[in-house]
Length: 135
Ligand SMILES: Cc1cc2nc3c(=O)[nH]c(=O)nc-3n(C[C@H](O)[C@H](O)[C@H](O)COP(=O)(O)O)c2cc1C
Image 1 (cartoon, rainbow, N blue to C red):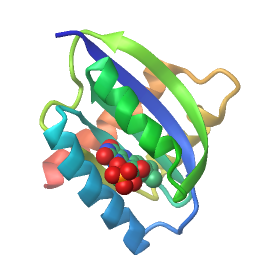
Image 2 (image 1 turned 60 degrees about the vertical axis):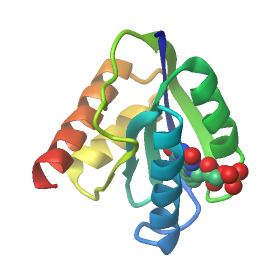
Image 3 (image 1 turned 90 degrees about the vertical axis):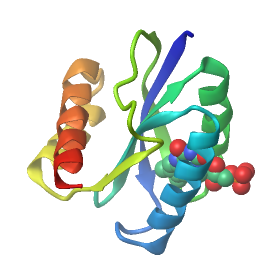
Image 4 (image 1 turned 180 degrees about the vertical axis):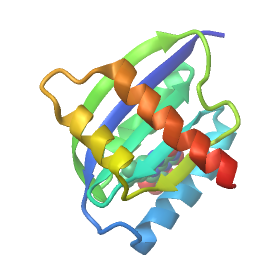
């Protein structure tokens, strides 16, 4: 099966810890597990950073809903590519709220004129593996 990955950053419209974060996560986990989508959602004080992976059709389908969601704005695509493996096979949607330097560095990397995709992915994978260890 060919796999597609979409990586974006957006500006949240509610503060971190707002109940809408948990509502987003619950919907995401329910819907994604029904549709073979996996990924990770990072919440920083002002941003969402998300990777979605699955078939191209299913990722496009969910992203068209996410793009119209009024809980965030200013979506910036970092990558949209076919990939050979899932980075988050265990997670219908992993989730972490982070306020530390690593999260701030990731947001800064994603704000660059031409973000370094690999550097950003490595930071997100590191955050995801911390989350997995503490789960
Ligand atoms: C930052 C963010 C990430 C989201 N991630 C997902 C996701 O991975 N999967 C999903 O089904 N919905 C996700 N949503 C929620 C969708 O935007 C949408 O509300 C949900 O899919 C229900 O859509 P519906 O009411 O049209 O059925 C996300 C929303 C936001 C703001």
